Image 1 (cartoon, one colour):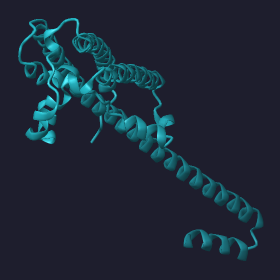
Image 2 (cartoon, rainbow, N blue to C red):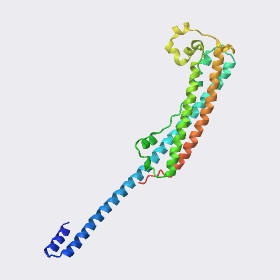
Image 3 (cartoon, rainbow, N blue to C red):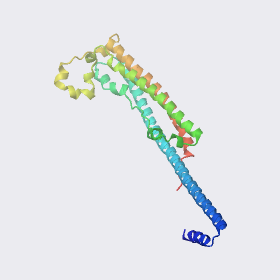
Image 4 (tube, rainbow, N blue to C red):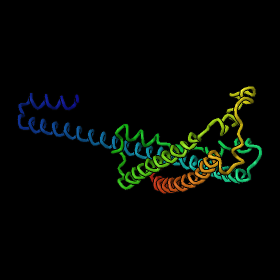
Length: 255
């Protein structure tokens, strides 16, 4: 700057107006070029940051998908256990056992299983922060959005099935006669003194008894609903695996 200032003074002192104007014009051009270069560098830095952020998002989504697959497998294994227990329980029911507690102790495991809950931290962060536009790969972005749209629909179906099935637990005509209080999970809360006073009917020995029929329906539906859950979980896993493979080639963070 000192050099340019000295040049200007020298030209003005020597009354070289034409050269001064040319110099001043050239200096303006240099300033403009400097500003344009600075803007270009800034834009380049911003684009680089956006690209790096895009890759980070792909990697985070991939991590969520990997967690989903582990939880899906855990859920499928749990449903398999539930179906096996339910089938075994029905076999015991039809044998009309004298001891009802044999049925009661397996009742909860025959109707409950681990529920899959998807990991959506990454996609929720992207959408809530308005960073969805930073995903420049339109085809991959479309795959991501389609996957989570399908996932939401599948989860709603699973939730509805589970809610409908859980209602069966409260539809026994005589809940005390059924023997909820004899389930191991609840026995300690009632206590031995109270349990001795509560009714202990042998509905399991009468196939025409309404509780027998409701129990039979409930456990049978556990197998049917479990089979539906398994198929839906397999579909979710297939979609998850497909998207995960698409993300792998884009989830490459340079050092």
